[in-house]
Length: 259
Image 1 (cartoon, helix red, strand yellow):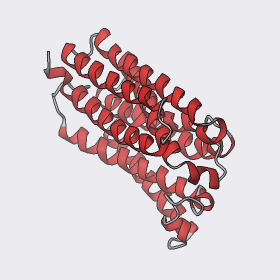
Image 2 (cartoon, one colour; image 1 turned 60 degrees about the vertical axis):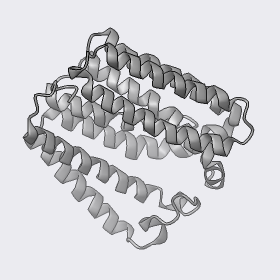
Image 3 (cartoon, rainbow, N blue to C red; image 1 turned 120 degrees about the vertical axis):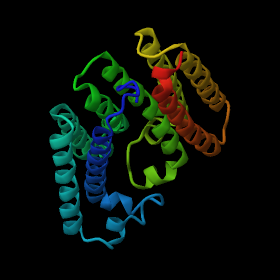
Image 4 (cartoon, rainbow, N blue to C red; image 1 turned 135 degrees about the vertical axis):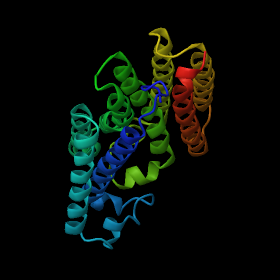
């Protein structure tokens, strides 16, 4: 809606949704295949079908490949080649780069966020068929949003990541370092989201909403610096991050028709 300014091509909309959904599903299954050993060690993931053995690994690979092929065909035939390129980059980053770095580096979360930020960009590029400043800003905004979102999960599920020996930030550098990173990325998210108004893509109504919700999220983050019961705070931060993302999406969608 942001990209097409509410001049909706429903065929393109459905093809994009179908193609992107299938590519994401493919990446998810590949990721579950790669992570089936560590998924067994975490309460959050130990009941996944590959971790329990309900689905054989070979069947999962066939399923993941089939999903990906159909998804890319839909994007190539009915959307455009730039969205196909974005999908290929996203699946490579998520399955290969993130699959490796999450086990070896504290920066695995950041690598994973690159893949997670691509689907909204794909939606924009599906309409415009170009990479421009707006698409770059969407990418940056979604990367910055994901970092406090996932760091909150890492704090809330600290024991899971520790048991699985995954070097996420709170496990490797502690809670305070993670809280400071959360604050930095919340500020970066708020600042980058406002640039859409600065560059003239959306109006002042969007600007006001994002200032309000961004600074309230920052206030919640600052409150965490003096809280010792990190698990409860992290759960609140995680849930509010979903509110932030939904608010951003709705406000961005309405941006072209708001002042």
